[in-house]
Image (cartoon, rainbow, N blue to C red; front, top):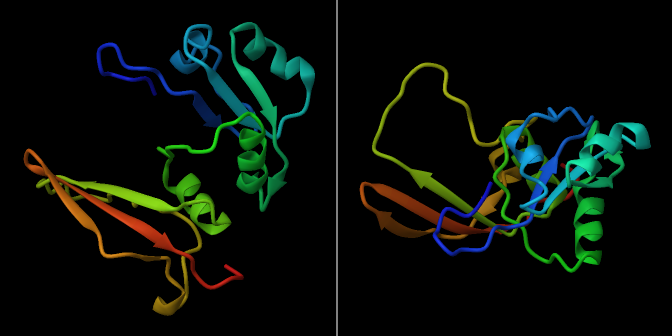
Length: 163
């Protein structure tokens, strides 16, 4: 989660870790002294926070909603730190939670001309919707060719409330 462009600026890394299980030996923790890192967690025990603080992480306590971090509260806390935009590189569950909470404004999907087969993972995991009319809708995508790959970019159209 660092900039790979020579001379580029590293972003502030924000790790969503509901139960504060990120290993202290993880590179995101061991490099926190040189790359700003925020651990968002529902764990409130200061003794559990201490090793991460000593490694250079900032720990932000966030309440839970439906067993996950309340991302709306997290966005407000980040906004209070003058962070007004994030790039979410999450797994399927975090992606679903972000969509469901209404914090996603734009989606970028990269498509490569490769077929893997097997039981592939979906980028959005969760309860899903029962009817197509309840789906998260996207605007017509812009398509950018990146070598053999394609980048599809769309704005998220808010869906029906109550998901």
